[in-house]
Image (cartoon, rainbow, N blue to C red; front, side, top):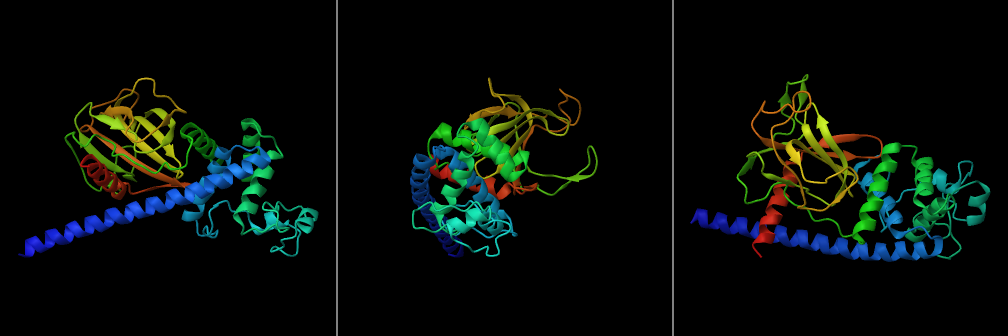
Length: 330
């Protein structure tokens, strides 16, 4: 009787979890539809392509969600322009909404919706202001890169945003939140939470990922929509691939046996796409293999606009595995 009740309880939890996830995704799709309308409206005025605006907005949204020194997003647009930049560094009133006085004090703030105010909390004003800033350099990609570097003063930030631009332009929409488990569910594999475990080869360090044990040659797949940032040899990870997604997260696949044909840095990938195969490469110069059982080392790293750190991928792997099983049962 107790076992039966427990099974019912577990099934109910699974049912409600699934429906909550679906509701969240539906809400995000609706918000993305509204965002895209706003991007296209500002594109028509400034000639800055919608996917450029989407890339900057998405980058900043993710930064705001992991930083404590800047406020969280409240509206549709995630771009954060500090008060002193908006109103002007010498402006005595950082809450100034007058386009005229803001211009006098050298601020960025612009009136984007035509109400006579340059409101830093208004989505349309914020998006138009940033688009106007970009267009002052030019509307082609090379000049946009220069504008982004002058604004952020960080090469990595510019690189991540340019990657986002390519992804959005390639797929033509914003709803890119599906994921896939990194190996086929029909394969014989096993894994457990190993993030933070001690590692000794090459010096004392912690394990920054989850090991998925499988046979040599088992296909390794992209887990997200993203762009290949890294491909090649690393003495720790062996043959490895790094993919950056639109959440500013870097997905690291290591100890591969090889890469899929024609895979290259700068290539755009989607969930489930073949990128390589399981191996045991690493812990030495290029070509070293067999120092440990074959497995995929999968790591995740988050960029917050200042630095990048690893976090435990295990909960995400479990979620993607479950979601893929549910999808295959439909």
